[in-house]
Length: 191
Figure 1: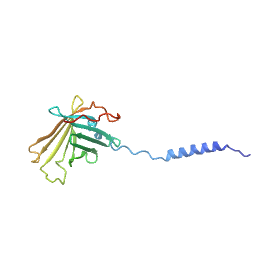
Figure 2: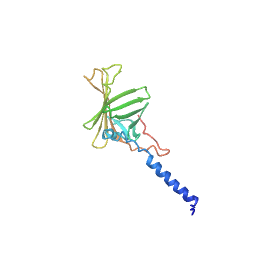
Figure 3: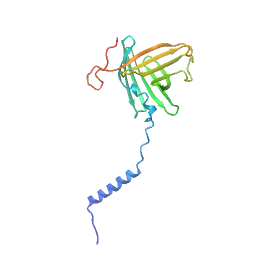
Figure 4: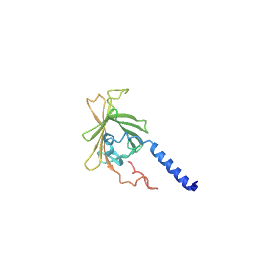
């Protein structure tokens, strides 16, 4: 006795067999290498910020976003006469944070460091190949109790024996109209 199946039934059965085979042979996604606790240490800096100098004047605006499944923090700085960007990443193999900064004035800075006692401190003191090893840049970011962030950049010309403040700013969450609003003013006027 011969048995005939409608063509649609055969197609459905073949589809189910193929789907099952595809699911059983599919590779699992590799684990996110940036999911560790250390890779989240700088997340307090994520946000859209207005940055003020010690005297209360607006220094600029800064947008910090997490990218690549948390593997990178991207900074977009805007100030009067200058824009800049940095890329920040935790290097698990070395146990260090790394920042590369570039800006429209030709500025370029490579700094590395650690998050210790609630402060992210990055410096170029130990980076090889510096033109003048006695010149040191050190930047520290601290989350304050009110949710703002202090960024204190200091420099030394004598290998760290003495220091001068290059910039001391307070990051306050922006109340500006956000960039996804069509036709909105994107940033406050900088004076």
